[in-house]
Image (tube, protein in one colour):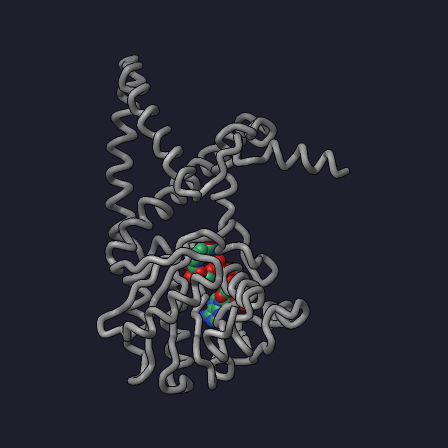
Amino acid sequence: MSVIYNRVALIGLGLIAGSMAHAMRRAGLATEITGYARSPETRQVAVEIGLVDRVCATAAEAVTDADLIVLAVPVGAMGQVAEEIADHLKPGAVVTDVGSVKRAVIEAVAPHMPEGVHFIPAHPLAGTEHSGPRSGFAELFDNRWCLLVPVEGSDEAEVARLAGFWQALGSNVDVMDADHHDLVLAVTSHAPHLIAYTMVGVADDLRRVTDSEVIKYSAAGFRDFTRIAASDPTMWRDVFLTNKQATLEILGRFTEELFALQRAIRLGDGDHLHAYFTRTRAIRRGIIEAGQDTDAPDFGRAVARRKAAETG
Ligand code: NAP
């Protein structure tokens, strides 16, 4: 693979930026990667593990002379970071972000972008419940989608170059409008996270009654909720504060459906329940056919355990 952007600056050095650094190196996409994170601790870890070529003491220093600047901080910090770097961007540079919400990021960042700098928002649909500079890995984006959300007047050639960059990181790329993005993500990611947070919270309340049973017998569906509910609290606080409207819309619909299922249970309406669960099972099949998850039972955990036991 060949270099797509000579110098790349990563602002924020957590899961997403770290994974981008690893994947860029895997494919040889940049000649120099600089990085900056807010805390000296994170910057120190990044130096220790050689996460990027040069860790800088300020965001301004990291972006100086950079051809691509990636804002990989929580959504609520995007505006402040954009303001910090604005005067240090070189003409013709591309600024992108990886924020999980798009309309709010555009509103926070675009006003700070100087003339001659290309701002092209993006969102890789890939992540884990881990965060911080040690959590990244090169394969995170492989065969996952990255959505580009160009703003009015975005240069088409630069959008195509950024698309090529994400493809070289392993992703499939689509282009989407910001409001549509925020609604789709409210359905596929944001509302499910809130539901998982709630379910784990309810179980935690219950634990006070049932002692350790909730943890001891958590092999069923609950364990998967706990993985999602272990996601970074700052990131998810910002997602809900900034994708308010779409999330509330989806939660409203969710509540209506929940009441309908609750009613079916009360009335003993097995046909309703069976038809509903048949429909939802087909959705899982669609996700597997689209190559977005494994078909192995229990997400492949049993197979992984058996292999680990075999290899000693
Ligand atoms: P993360 O692992 O928690 O890393 C966030 C990084 O941002 C840290 O290095 C943090 O530095 C830095 N940071 C926070 N506030 C800052 C500020 N004001 N100035 C400079 N640096 C600051 O988070 P992540 O999972 O990589 O998420 C980064 C972005 O990607 C978020 O916008 C999130 O919505 C989006 N995203 C996340 C996922 C996911 O599943 N995790 C998936 C797709 C997109 P310190 O360590 O010094 O605090």
